[in-house]
Amino acid sequence: MQQIELLAPAGSLSRLKTAIQYGADAVYAGGEAFSLRGAAQNFSLSAFEEGIAYAHARGKKLYVTANIIPHNSDLPGMARYFAELDALRPDGLLVSDFGAFLLAREHAPHIPIHISTQANNVNYRTVDAWHKMGAKRVVLARELSLAEIADIRAHVSAELELEAFVHGAMCISYSGRCLLSNYMASRDANGGACAHPCRWNYALMEEKRPGEYLPVYENERGTFIFNSKDLAMIEHIPELAESGITSFKIEGRVKTEYYVACVTKVYREAIDAYLANPAGYTCSPAWMEELGKVSNRRYTTGFYLGKPDETSQVYGSSSYIRTYEVVGLVTGYDEATKETILTQRNRFFEGDTLEIVPPKGPFVTVTAQRMRNGEGEPIRSAPHAAMTVRMPLGARYEPGTILRKAREDGPVEV
Image (cartoon, rainbow, N blue to C red; front, side, top):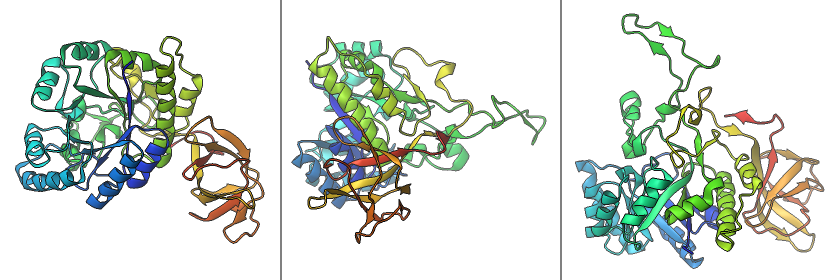
């Protein structure tokens, strides 16, 4: 039985720690330059050093993304950056451009090279060529079916690792190579500054009637004709494994710690269940239910089971559906009083029904009661951001454990 790596996003050092705590085998993170997620907090060299040490101390890995499509002016700085990373010894360096690949070989010889999905890796000749030039891993394009991936696996060396996205936001452009953002907002999508114009509301204008916008819409809010649903392959873990994918990748370096924790936890449980008993594996309905509790644009299987059709788009809105919010994080435990110590994230009240989401095991439902503030004074609510709250939860939970509650106004689009 092949081993499957669960690879989670780390948009910041705190999210890196959350991902590992909730079951990731490896994380990927971008630096302050040369990364395709300029909106993420991203990592300084010192943060990388801390993150690598944190991961390695727990037997986990950290991969650095440097997958912009560089221009001439980027090359000197990229060479220096790769040399600085080489001294830190991350577990992989992700690039998408052949010039960047050569720079990585020259200036970061101790870091295994991974080829980004941005390089349009859709056939086995391309994948095999990258391997023969020295790449350890190739991230496959999102536009591949399971059958195509299996064909690639059959034609390349078993030593080559294949990585593929299994969950998260989808891009309307081929393998993420988008020019809409450059054209419409002067923000370079291939340089890490995408403005996401695919999520905007569009109208139709006839060329001889300038300024006259013709309504093209599914509802009163307009139409979002480029707006894809999010990818979710939780119901197809066996097929993913049998296709030969080595690393199951979760998208989301700009997503919250809550998102990273919940999605990573679900896929960890599913992968472990499959590896423990492939023949008897079944997908738990609780996993898809749990994925519905994080922000999403509704889910699709992307290209894996065949080319997407009209049902793979969201036409009525570009918003995320949000059903829950995080109210606190566990920071400690008072053995004398049997109280859990929390840091508040969103307001909650005495009597609220809360769900505890531990790194392992099912969520636990509790009622907020006997609440006290950091000074030990009784309180009826926790209204202040980052305030300390003490209350019994019935058991001891490790620091970093998340508490959430259902939104009082029900699911909302944000």
